[in-house]
Amino acid sequence: MEVSDLVAAKEGYCVKCKAKREIKDPEDITMKNGRPATKGTCPTCGTKIFKIGK
Ligand SMILES: [Zn+2]
Image (cartoon, rainbow, N blue to C red; front, side):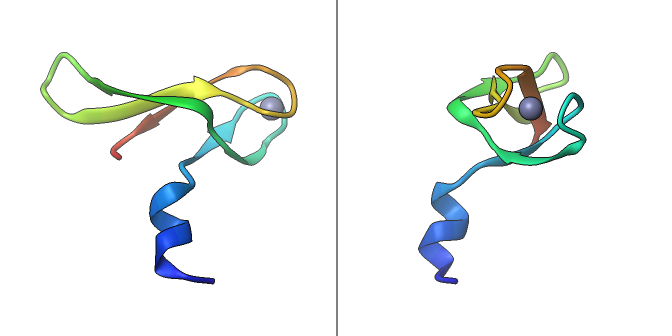
């Protein structure tokens, strides 16, 4: 695995699949406390995935 792959693929935990999934259509957001987060959807089931941190 190359380092560039780790940076490119954003993974989050899908509560519906109960597994880690690559976040589809990832969007960088900032939480109310100023910390970065990423939101997107699960490519398998379409459930929203929210991940704290970039
Ligand atoms: Zn899922």
